[in-house]
Image (tube, rainbow, N blue to C red; front, side, top):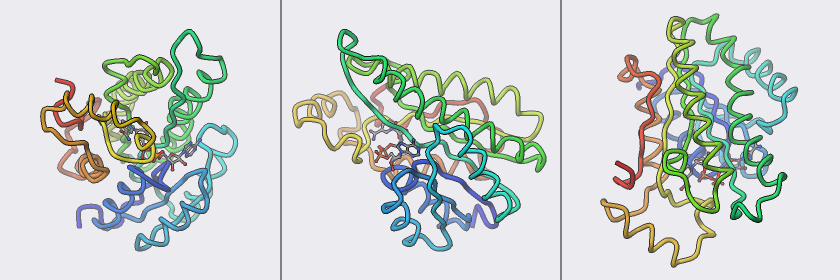
Length: 242
Ligand code: NAD
C-alpha cells in the first residue's frame, strides 16, 4: 500500500479520468474525496470506491472552494494529495469564439486549479508535506485549431505548475503536471469518427489512451517513488508529442 493513511482530494472526480484516479489512489490505501458539480454521478462513483466520499464543488466558485476545503480539513485533519483534474471544453474557431466561451473554459480549468490549490496549500505548508498533480493536456504544449481557449487554459496550468513547484519546494510540497493525449472518455466521446481516425494515425503506439494510463502516472507522482520530482510535465499520449 503506497498511499496508506494519505488523504487525497480529486476535482472533477465523478467520472472519466478523475474517477479512475480516485479508484487507483484508493486501491493503494488513500482516503479519497471526490469533488465535482455532477452530484448524481459523483455519489455513484464514490459509493463504488472503498472509503471514498463525494462533495459537491464547482471549482470556479471562490467562496465555495474555501468552505469545502474547510469541511474536508475538519473531517480528515490533513490533505496530502491534490489532483486538479476538473476540466471542460467549449471548442470554437477563433473567428466565432465568444467572450463567454473563453471565460467558461479559463474559469473552470485554470482559475479552478488556482483556487483549489491556494485553499489547500495553506494546510500543506502547515503539514510540511504535499503532492499536487495538475491535469494539463498535450494541447497546452502544441495548441490546436478550434481550441484556443482550452490550449491557453492548459498552457496556463503548466506555467502555474512550474511556478508553484519553485515556490513550494522548500515546504516539501511537489507540484507536477500530467499532460494526457487522446484518452477515451466523455470529453472525447463526441468527436467524429473522422477526427478520431486522424488522431490515431498520428499516435506512434497506435491506440487511444485509457483513463488507467493517466491514473497510473498520477499514482506514481503521488507516491514516495516520485519524491525528487517537481515542476515536471509528464505526457501520457502514446508518443503523440515528442
Ligand atoms: P470528463 O468530461 O469525463 O470529466 C470531467 C469532470 O469534470 C466531469 O465529472 C465534470 O462534471 C467535472 N467538472 C466540470 N466542470 C467542473 C467544475 N466547474 N467543478 C468541478 N468539476 C467540474 O473529462 P475527462 O476526459 O475525464 O477529463 C478530465 C481532465 O483531463 C480534464 O482536465 C481534461 O481537460 C483533461 N484531459 C482529457 C483528455 C482526454 O482525451 N479525455 C486529454 C487531455 C486532458
